[in-house]
Amino acid sequence: MAPGPQSVTDRLRGMIMSGNIPPGRHLFEVPLATELGISRTPLRTALTALAQEGLLDYRPNRGYVVRSFSLDEVLDAYAVRGMSEGLAARLAAERGLSDEARAVMQRCLDDGDAILAGGELTDLGVLPWRAMNERFHEIILAGAGNSFLTEVTERMLSVPLLSRRVVHWYEYSRVRGSHDLHHLIFEAICRRQGERAEYLMREHIYQAIDIIRDNYEALRGENLRAAS
Image 1 (cartoon, rainbow, N blue to C red):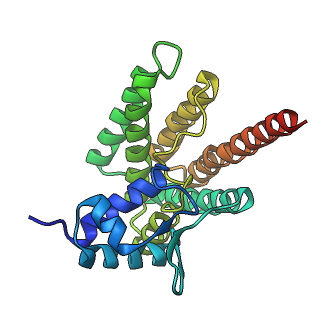
Image 2: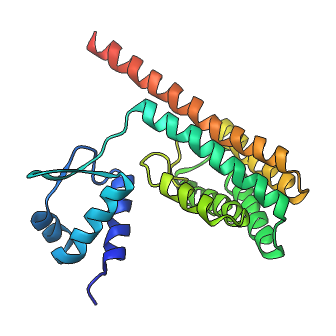
Image 3: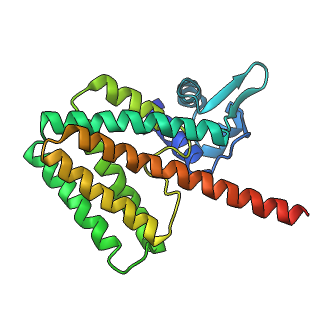
């Protein structure tokens, strides 16, 4: 069975967010359809959808181009993400979690602890860590019970480098600190402490802002030294 538009959209989105299709690349229907082994009809729909999400820019007579994001744009998006996921944590705490949601979040915490049990985030642990982290945040967003907040947050997370599946740091101390906040967020939600849950979630997200900025400045310094 030929892949449908949604399947093609998901595949292309994943390739863009993973960097397999880099920023600035022109995407023309015919060669891209050949490269992916699909027909042009679902591909055309996928390209339109990804342009609406902001991942692609459409340029008349030049086709679609993978959008690049400046450091400031990424950091601004993280600030908005902190507010939206902070609100989600607060609403989830005020509404209360179902027994099923609580059990899933507890498994996420246990999985994270197991991944970090050796005192490092190994190469083999990166993918399980990403999946655990994504699931933990998804449960909170679903627990907020606000479909508009869910739609806005998920749309925002389509921005490259903003996805929960992206790990911006691998140092054990930072990963451990991030997961410790997972524990505290879960505790606050379970205790119905809405304001505390919101504050902790914002702090959890805002940590990434500092880390991304630090990494960017370090990389910029290396490039300047190499140029000199």
